[in-house]
Length: 344
Ligand code: HEM
Ligand SMILES: *[C@@H]1O[C@H](CO)[C@@H](O)[C@H](O)[C@H]1NC(C)=O
Ligand SMILES: *[C@@H]1O[C@H](CO)[C@@H](O)[C@H](O)[C@H]1NC(C)=O
Ligand SMILES: *[C@@H]1O[C@H](CO)[C@@H](O)[C@H](O)[C@H]1NC(C)=O
Ligand SMILES: *[C@@H]1O[C@H](CO)[C@@H](O)[C@H](O)[C@H]1NC(C)=O
Ligand SMILES: *[C@@H]1O[C@H](CO)[C@@H](O)[C@H](O)[C@H]1NC(C)=O
Ligand SMILES: *[C@@H]1O[C@H](CO)[C@@H](O)[C@H](O)[C@H]1NC(C)=O
Ligand SMILES: *[C@@H]1O[C@H](CO)[C@@H](O)[C@H](O)[C@H]1NC(C)=O
Ligand SMILES: *[C@@H]1O[C@H](CO)[C@@H](O)[C@H](O)[C@H]1NC(C)=O
Ligand SMILES: *[C@@H]1O[C@H](CO)[C@@H](O)[C@H](O)[C@H]1NC(C)=O
Ligand SMILES: *[C@@H]1O[C@H](CO)[C@@H](O)[C@H](O)[C@H]1NC(C)=O
Image 1 (tube, rainbow, N blue to C red):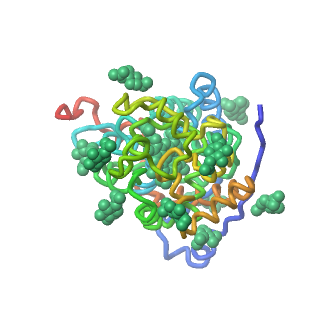
Image 2: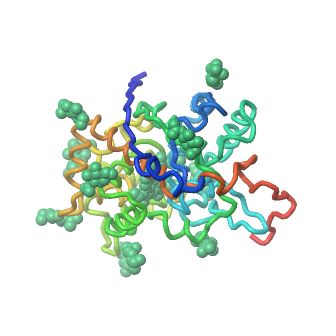
Image 3: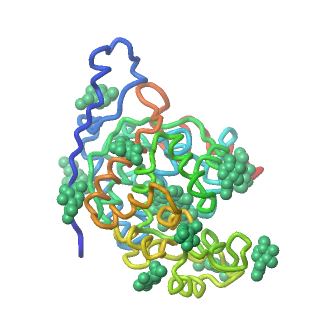
């Protein structure tokens, strides 16, 4: 089945400073680590992986959807599970933010995973960590790299819908703007190119790239960086003024596997989203050489992807006694379900 076991062991030297001055740090400054649940929930990773493996049999897209959930969680107030909260009297759900609405999916599976984890070790594992563990399992089950996931995140008691509207990149805002959004969070151009490689699996709706197919930037013509053969295929799948919700594979050649074909697609002008193709077609950009290097060597891509996932997973986690361990990923502990906002 073309499954390649690919394990990368990363040596992480995180404790040097806090080792020397532990008294300077409260427990809220604790670092994430790979053995956080070693005594309290030793089997958490295989429980998460098991539910995803089962679900993949009926939904080959679910791994891609779960990886994207972790990304959209981390880019808004850090990796704190905020994306999972539903609307309530004091929560404006991030699910209704522009980049997520009618697009992000996988919440039911997160609930199934949470239930399975709670059945083994109740009240211990955060929803934010479940997203991080699910992202790794999803990549690895699709043939991508495996890595040691750092854990110890806690869950937010708030959401930030306005932040989700502004922090998550849009496919048409241009490489310069997207690069800025990533660097604001400590992710450089290598990380941006590597993480964009996540578009090696999963689907996109016609509306997310339709502007490239007929009248690009008001020119009256399609995006000139779109391969003409691929253009015809996409125009058939997405007729002008047709149904914008129709789905297309992000990687037309190997739709559900995690491999480096995404980067060879960019080299032949077959990137689906404007933001994908710009990584290769923006004259003079440092991203071009990175695309070429990931295209020519899958190991290089995998190593850089893992490194970038760890950096992304480390964005402003709640640790120590900050936040909480939600018992239901959809709501803050103690919130009643009767005060759901009826006004939206
Ligand atoms: C670089 C800026 C990025 C932009 C502009 C972007 C934009 C998008 C868009 C528009 C879609 C299609 C959504 C839809 O049609 O409903 C999508 C899908 C997806 N994105 Fe990104 N994305 C970016 C980066 C990332 C990153 C960093 C990751 C993860 C590491 C990621 C993972 C995915 C996955 C796996 C899918 C498919 C999801 C599914 O099938 O459910 N993306 N992205
Ligand atoms: C992992 O982090 C937790 C919380 O900060 C800490 O109690 C534990 O000792 C750490 N484990 C290692 C191996 O550093
Ligand atoms: C851990 O979970 C996996 C999958 O759910 C299961 O196959 C395995 O037996 C479990 N191991 C332990 C020690 O509970
Ligand atoms: C976020 O964007 C959505 C969709 O455009 C909009 O309905 C919502 O009001 C925005 N939320 C905030 C808090 O700006
Ligand atoms: C890029 O960001 C700037 C500043 O936020 C904004 O004014 C501009 O419209 C953005 N460009 C695109 C193409 O969205
Ligand atoms: C991006 O950051 C990584 C370390 O996190 C570093 O190895 C790499 O050289 C950086 N790349 C660029 C282009 O600055
Ligand atoms: C393309 O879009 C521009 C600006 O929105 C518009 O003026 C023009 O008429 C359109 N051209 C065609 C061929 O639809
Ligand atoms: C548009 O396409 C989506 C996805 O295939 C489908 O669920 C929906 O029913 C379609 N809507 C219309 C009006 O055809
Ligand atoms: C367009 O894609 C085909 C493969 O379908 C490839 O052979 C060709 O070189 C591509 N053209 C360009 C200009 O990249
Ligand atoms: C990049 O440069 C080439 C050669 O000068 C030019 O043909 C092409 O249109 C440029 N691409 C873009 C996207 O500006
Ligand atoms: C691919 O990259 C890896 C790691 O960067 C390196 O060890 C390996 O030699 C490279 N393979 C080839 C064929 O260049």
